[in-house]
Image 1 (cartoon, rainbow, N blue to C red):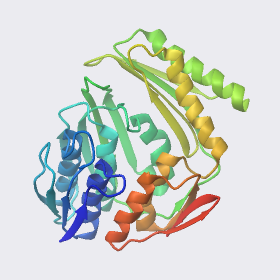
Image 2: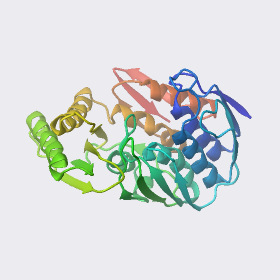
Image 3: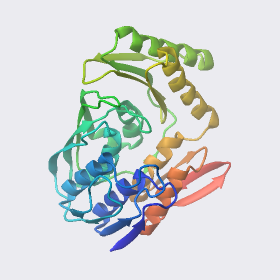
Length: 325
């Protein structure tokens, strides 16, 4: 059994999610200790437990210690099978982060996962970032994945619901093209329609002023368990998002999302800094290469974890950081 120190490097939930996914696809059982030891609330949170349950369901794995607050767990994978699963985070924990744990396992045999939790929450990509930036970057594998956003859920109320279906596919090498779609998606729940409109208008005006391009806008307003808003902007494999909160003007939310995208584009690289670590699992499995502006702590953490499972990547830092396998 492979022992993993959950306090290493980034020391957060990324280690738990990635370790159990790697365990499932390699067949190597793992023990994770000192989970999130250096965080203000150490141990597993509801979101991490949900991700572990999703991966265990996809591979008929057995788990001990997968409870909120636990500082260690063991995960023993079984055979990956096509499954139709449901997981309830139980809080406004991030649905996109649960997807990131389950998806590389599900792509082996295919399957579906219905998740209840938060679609747009702090310290996580929005569900729109997943559909518009992350999935297209997967190439052929991404085209076999569908996401149905049944209900949006914002922090702290949660209550979102998403169904993702993945077809079994042999992953193709990661190759990031220079073209791709661009857009702005501005969403709100239980708020006046003008909130999402103002977010979108602010983002569009900022991007037009910086690039001379008019980014297409889509606005979605819905009812749900609680109020919230988000704005996601993208251009190819560069993306950025911002979450609204009480007291923060809608115009500022749109500006934050748009300025984040411009910063990423101006820094250069094939992908934005968040996507640079999200693709590493797939790069190690299928090969390919891409560049990013900086070698982030999250990327360093996943590279370290991949090497523990015998899946090392080649990293070259020459101005830009090139990841390849």
